[in-house]
Length: 353
Ligand SMILES: Nc1ncnc2c1ncn2[C@@H]1O[C@H](COP(=O)(O)OP(=O)(O)OP(=O)(O)O)[C@@H](O)[C@H]1O
Image (cartoon, rainbow, N blue to C red; front, top):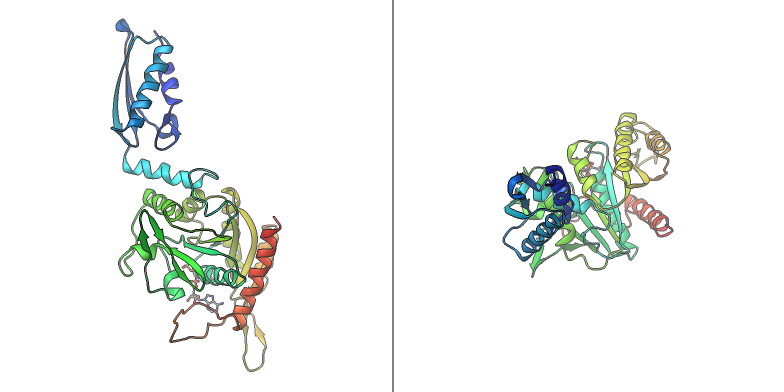
């Protein structure tokens, strides 16, 4: 009679038909019982969905494999994996480079915008970089992946919600950029209190269920910092090029270096640093004041072996009551022009790769 360990090996090697992961990876084997005198093996297995043709096929595969290994009779019971586990594996799927993830098209560059801490202007940079790339004639999408602290819709002055067509969500288009945000799916300003597995599910559906069409760039505004949420999102994402936003203050640059290290550890590729709030320029004298210090961006770029893509001074966009978008810099605004330069630089750099 074969050993229990051998039974486990045989069954573990088979795949959950819905998650496309081996039962070893999903921890699908719940129980194995052996009755030696009858050469009988009984296995209880959890899979993502029961009562399906796929389950029948898996049943057949298990029975055949065990019989080939010399088992006389096989008993099988199936249960369903917990929602949490399923979400965890679906989330992990999104992290697979070529896995079931919808790539808006195979040429699309995923460009993630990260920061070491909150409040340095990561979302402002994401929004304006996306718009600048669109102004260059690129087809651009923007995912507000700062799931718990979404701000992109407000920053861009988006007042409409995506519509659902068939099984697909049509992103909202604003300033030539297709946008999707957690903010579209919660009641007005309600805090998001979903935990890990839901996060994976949500991110995954931002890729898979949104009708992105053909895109040159899909930008992702990541959660700030180097904590659990940022790490989870980094892990779940497909391979991205990544830009780190920091202020020039040394402590901001220190934590930003940790964000850069996290990107590298999770196999994303750093393409540059943007120094935001780099200085304040007096409108009357043109003199520059380095309010948050100087040199943090250069140090950070050195440490991460990358370059400073641009430096943005402190200045608000001009308000426009008619077409209100509080964080969007017009093309002829001094910051709009700097964003345009950064976008052109990035576009050249990324299209050469
Ligand atoms: N260059 C700038 N000049 C003036 N204000 C700026 C500049 N960049 C960003 N801000 C302002 O700073 C604040 C923080 O910016 P933003 O929300 O983009 O930061 P963040 O890093 O995305 O923060 P979090 O990740 O915590 O949401 C906002 O009020 C924004 O308008």
